[in-house]
Amino acid sequence: MKRDMILITGASSGIGRAIALHLAAPGVLLHLGGRDPDRLEAVARDCAARGARALTRRQDVRDAEGMAEWIGGAGTLDLVFACAGITASTAARAAGAPREAPGQVRRVLDVNVGGVINTVLPALETMSGQARDGRGVRGRICAIASVAGLVAFPGTPSYCASKAAVDRFMVATGGNTARDGILLSSVCCGFVRTPMVAANDFPMPGLTEVDDAAAAILRGVAAGRRRIVFPWWLVAGSRLMDLLPPRLAELYYSRQPAGQAGSMPETGGMSS
Image (cartoon, rainbow, N blue to C red; front, side, top):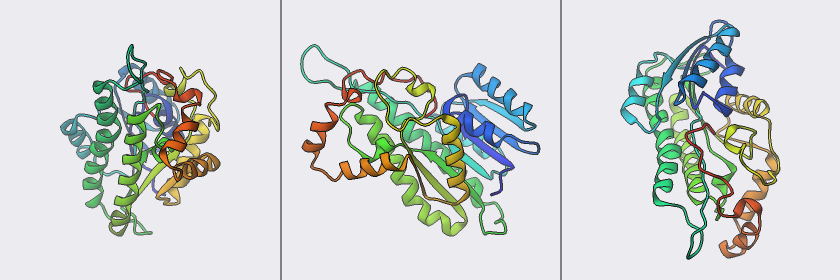
């Protein structure tokens, strides 16, 4: 897998940071995007210490024009990782059932879905003009979805919806782009030890260390897998649960700690 020119969103923490550090090496140029300039510069310094050249950009993935300018001006790109994302859950109300605030729903969808689209579309445009390598590949694009995208979890409705959209978009689009030599991958993972889950005070089955997650993602991207899953048993169980009638699945989900209102506070633009 050619990995000399790389662009990563959500690179200031979590999975994005871990991928950047895994790929940092002499001769590698990293374009690192994020919203926290201090953390982003810290990641760039760590990458430089490993011999890579790292260029940072304070960039909100919701800004379609800014994203297009950044990605379109980056030059040749071998790998692009869309890692920026946020999560949030329902909140208790004085009267009525728990619900997500309208503004929160829009933010989650704008960042998680719109941010991926704003990353993937200009990356496809750039890679379409690149020459194929010896295996016929022009470039590879990976987006972080989630096992949450495979279920309808009542505690995190907009997060589940956003990650389902990311997964379906990447998997469906990838069938066409592969014929043009651009390989797309969707990552459906469970809980990963990142700042996004740091505030969770409930059991997280299959919790994966962030370095292990980054390594699994890179293996899958190198192998050209359209969908990268881990832990496999959690993903398999979630897919089986989704075959149940919604009301039956809700009886189980609503009894889990993560299904309670306020169990996952909204993250302020942290990476997935």
